[in-house]
Image (tube, rainbow, N blue to C red; front, side, top):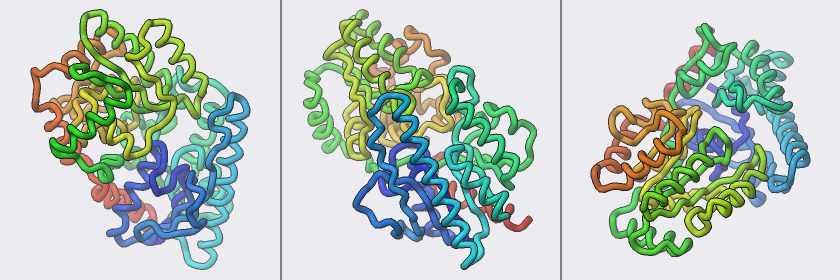
Length: 407
């Protein structure tokens, strides 16, 4: 089977959840009976325009955004221009390849690549699978503004034209009104994010990494380190987490919080507002707002060094950051937006809060930071590695593709 994938992320080492998904899936597809071509956005300037990744041919579209740190509306204009270029190249590549060698399926990932999917489905009459990675733009508190409105329009349009819709979890379907009751939806769980690239350290390495990372922030011996990684969006619970840390400090706990991430692409001004909030709350030196995403090795080091990792989201379509941390034996707190089957909260693999209330979050933090449950990290790793596999995800994805192609 010959497949063309169009995605906002391309390996190696992409940022973002979709890029992480594509990287893991391509690695697993190498052992499957499929010829895969990927047209994807890449931030790496020095790579060839076309190269091989495992067994896949990658057509890289350079969209490294010099506007990523600029204010609105310039950042929005720059981002949309880059996305438009990606869609044009994606549709053109699929059509050119189809003219030489029949393309069995075009797999389009998320609404930002929906224009390429619509062109392939409507103009070129090619079978299209639409991968919906998130229902976020359909939520009331996240669906405001012209970008979200455009996303909903493109989502509906390609949903009508695609032969198959693929989602990572059932609650993603529940969050998108026009997908209700459809029988052409395949639910295929993701693999464990970048866990395959982040080796779980032994106790000796863990101690060395812990000392190195803690020294970066001047964290003294005896103080507990709490780690968050992700976008600084309202639904990620960052403000509530800061307040929860303030309350734990007021109750006598000795902790430091590291917030890795940024508000981009939503709004980079969130970064500065968080820093001001930390200053106003008297938490300088106790809460570090990094204002940037960590690369894979940095993320691994911070997770390994942390005494607890916290992801208090009210919505997560899958939650790679938490899954990756748990695969590294992190003692994790997750928010009400996580699917319990993904993170294994019912099986005791993590602590899941029912709300974003800072008091409940603070209590969960203290529970995870205590020594009452020494096996929590080991249970987390066993659950994630036993439940999530890129090989399984790739096999189930290809099976769903093949069923569509045979129709």
